[in-house]
Amino acid sequence: MDFDYIENKIITFSNALATLNEALKESKTRLERDGCIQRFEYCYELAWKCAKVIIKDHGGVDVNSPKEVLKKCFVMKYISNEMLWFDMIEKRNSSVHTYNIGLANGLMDLIPSYYLEMNALLLKFKELYDIK
Image 1 (cartoon, rainbow, N blue to C red):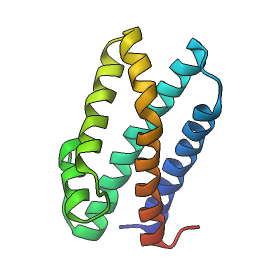
Image 2 (cartoon, helix red, strand yellow):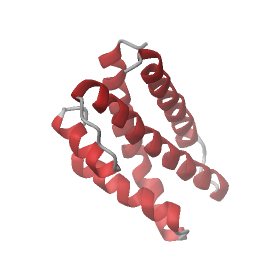
Image 3 (cartoon, rainbow, N blue to C red):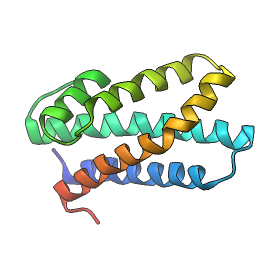
């Protein structure tokens, strides 16, 4: 697979995670909380889609659904906490398809650990492709 294409995917994921990190540092008015949740949602999307490309490049396997991608990431040792990632999928799907104040507040409590897990994946990808 084209290195520039993969590098672009990794950099896009990295830039998105930087925006999530920024949002986590802000005080949490309702608007800031909602913005942070939105940033989590697009970071999650970029994480699994970036992983999909890397799995194809490194493992020669074409996986399509987020759960398939994450299972393969676990097998390939790109992630160590498969259950946290599956929880992330569930919470992301819930937050996208419905708005509930309790769900939003609960998700905000989880996003810092999700951020750390996504950042660990990003660092693994950067190391794999020697991207600074």
